[in-house]
Length: 154
Image (spheres, rainbow, N blue to C red):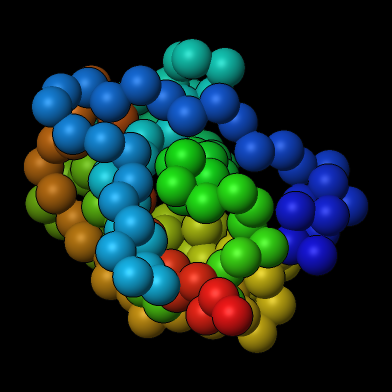
């Protein structure tokens, strides 16, 4: 269902980016999965680096948020057999590296929210925070973390 939808959209779940330090990509506890922060890696490289609106344009930053969401789904797959086990996306937290006077963080993180809506429909509607920060690991423009609820197993 959800995995088929990803394919229908012409997307794919990437390989999980290796952690940059002493943590795991995702942790499952009960019927919830929490992801670590995911950067916009595509084929092993960051899509862009730098501050949004200064060195990275808005459209590229939105693309980074979408890729970070796909990477978060890849992280979730490290602790579940299938994304079809997801009942709903509960929370998304997006961090946007930007100059102090940039205030369009929600627009950037919306790239991830829209992707999740396209894949999960109503189950993709989630609570969200979009936070501006002065820098992110590896000079990434966007970092994203997710909390998902899984279907209760019989």
